[in-house]
Length: 231
Image (cartoon, rainbow, N blue to C red; front, side):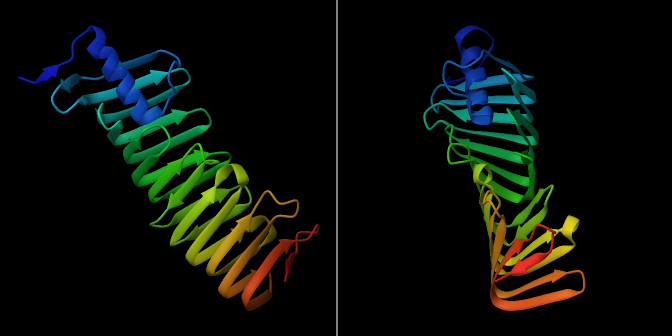
């Protein structure tokens, strides 16, 4: 029989490390890992570790919880599902299912709510690459919210550390503090520029107060007094 219940010793440590790698993407030789679950199993034939029921993992200041977690020791791919909650450094994530392919690629799906670097992403699906300037790809669309306003589109991609975002399809941007709203077929937002701006392409439009501007291509800056400056 190759499928065994994990009860103590090295296999328990294997399970804890596996689930933590899948969810927290922690590097080797990091803080000790603690895992609790109602049931742990290890299939020696397939190399799959399974934790079920009240899964909770702590490592350093990070933690993760869910209803069920699996990790394949051969492929280094793990999943956690069922009311998933993750806290890691300055990131908080909730979703229905989280897949981790090694330590550099996560995929969250199902009612995703991700908060990091002062911004919040909500949508049905997001791929996250922490080593690539916190690169996110939302192929099914979503909304990014920050103190400056919101960005939404049918397809969203961005680099959180660069405050740079691209939206394709029904792109929409708002800045309530300046009574500004705009959109187009595509938008590119550059938040870390000394003078932040957004480029709108394809049926581009901008509203501010009672003023309206339309063009096939617009670059929108914010003047010092908060008014929109288009080019």
